[in-house]
Length: 430
Image (cartoon, rainbow, N blue to C red; front, side, top):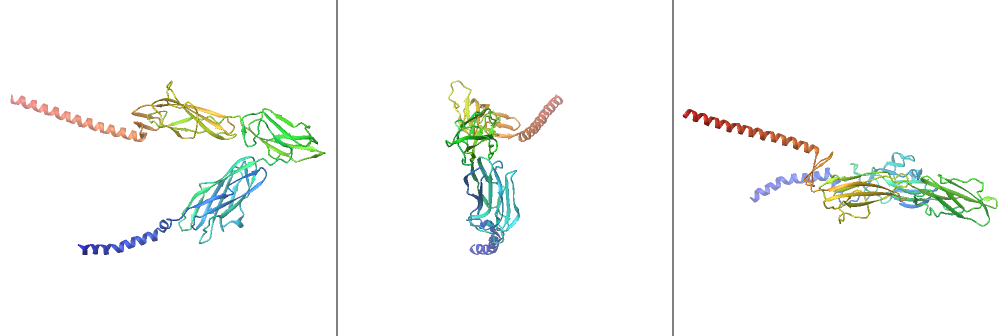
């Protein structure tokens, strides 16, 4: 027995060695991938505050995770209404030595693209510079520069293995230039970065005692220059019925016959509620599921969305079910509910505090079979069957039913035939 086992082992040993060799030869990337990191792309600086009209520089870095890479494709996006690209790259500072195509950008669409490679054996770096980008600040607000999911970093393994898993985008705060003229304040719009739901604006300013007059202007452009005609020495201005959007107040003072520097003050107005929206409930508005999923989403074209608030009201009077107050929530939202009828109320708030409200009815019923319009059938609140499966099951059920009817009919005919034969035999015997 021992001899047979030894012979079997010796006969299988070459095949075992061949299999191990083939694994390491044909699949080296599987083995080499173990214990190695993954690549990351990040921006530096990742945040900052810059004034309108100025420029700032952001560098795009690569960390290869202690591996050698030889090619990459990086795609960025930025808000074109707030930032514009001045210079897409400083090639002398980039480690890329083979550009598949020159770095490209679109100030209309807010996109940047870099495609390049590195000569063998590639590059292994913790903070290699892919590109240096110069932006000009065009408007106030918050500007994210995002590294898109269409970006790739390829391992120098001859297999074009994408190892990019981490992307650290940047967030930049864009402000009005510091005052060069009178110091401006507003009791109605005290924060230049905040949106307000009012259209009546009051502006006040301070200047030296020997100022003989001021020239000021309200416009939609950040760098406007008031004319050289004095509006008088008054230190207050009032505007009514201003439309939604960003407005800029520009003012300069006349002192000893010379016009001084200009101060710019931003005014953000949004009196329009977010767009109307609906509430979708899954699996349906009438369901046996005790944990329905509530979906909601809308947009705001002026100041942008801030948050959502939700309230679940029970239709039962004096019931403890449901919450009688709004809570901040995000879509999709779900909570455990008892049997009964409810009203779901969702409020969508924009940055100025305006809100849009949506309502939807919900019924939690102890239903064995529930029909979901356009989707299928839900059994016992937990087993879902799409319509194609329902139709197929119905067809098979009809076939089985037809077959059963045919079998019963044949059995019935056979019984009848047996009785007829017995009767005939009895008659003949008589």
